[in-house]
Image 1 (tube, rainbow, N blue to C red):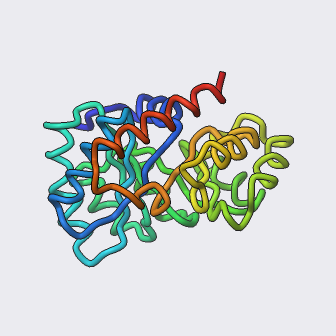
Image 2 (image 1 turned 90 degrees about the vertical axis):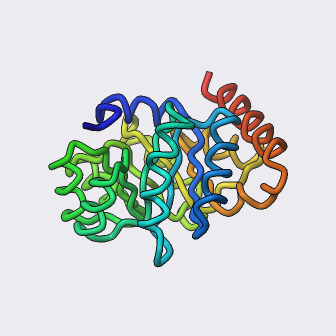
Image 3 (image 1 turned 135 degrees about the horizontal axis):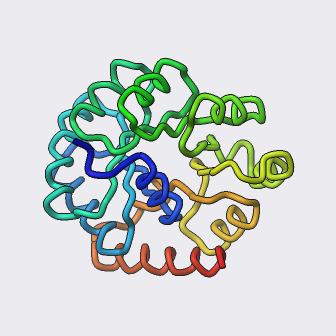
Length: 218
């Protein structure tokens, strides 16, 4: 039985404005990063399916999160096929993120009641994603479409929940630009994990960024 309902997951993601997007082949290292993110106040984590042993690492992270980070949502990203969506959901993925939009993945998520976050980069794709049941629509790659696209999109689609990934930097300037444009959530990958050797400092950085974003959302 899922730890959280689909509605709860959507609420938690929208209430956690920063989502780390991360992959590492070493389980212990990934666990350390997860704990540091949790200590910093993050409650949503996207582990990406980008390595040959991603499934094994993710499978090990699921029980670790339940025991050590009980309020953390652990989702899987970089999913292209129904088969991958199925197997990651079976081992405990709380949500599924795609870099693109595919009906077969949407259907698997619908079958399991698992929130689906498809990647889009056109108005037509955003509209299609909402019609296909997306819990949150991912704008990707953000560095290609830019904040101006999101701002323009908000005219005809003011209420669609949006998460942008790609090109978002862990700086006040970058965050201010994206949230002013109208995103609800930002996903951050390599830019966020440049200096993680000192996990305490990393947790403090995350905490600062979260507090800053919350001032933007008031």
